[in-house]
Length: 116
Length: 113
Image 1: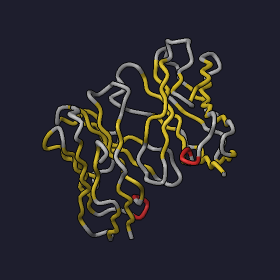
Image 2: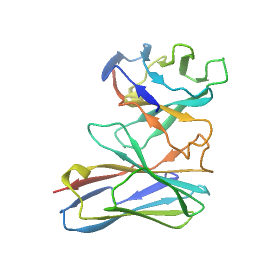
Image 3: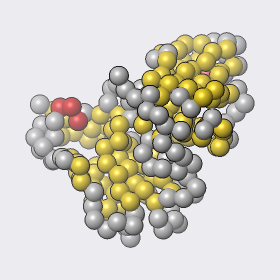
């Protein structure tokens, strides 16, 4: 069975600074997807970034980038130039490449507060 | 307007009540999902529908009964719930099952008294 661990229940960062959220996972699969989702107070889960395990290059989306270390089973999210609107819960998630039927395995989340 | 709409936003019910949660997606997707987000556990998948057929039931108790009358609508019928069923219920959709990009609604916050 796959598991996803986020070891930081809460973090805070000053506006315009950089913050890194940690995620580790456990799986015996060789091919899979990893995701970071953001859940603001509106409660809607919003996809921030995704990584395909067979791609060595780290994914980036504007101010968001990941550090994917497949051997270490680590998938951290870096947010650069933090903005007040980045305040939210952040969830790391895993999905098998085949036969997943949409089953995302989530971590427990990290509550990020961006302070002015 | 988001692509996935859930109603009601909040729901309070007694253990003997029967209620339904509604989800509608405006994205032309073929797959829809129910996820449960409780305070003490990570989000977990409950049900998956593909082309209106249930393809996954993640060991959910029978007091939760899903219904997918067409590819745009998904319901979760609730009866004789327990207080521990209080949670945020999130609906999601995707183009097909097994593809990676899920679009979520804002959820229904359910409280069972």
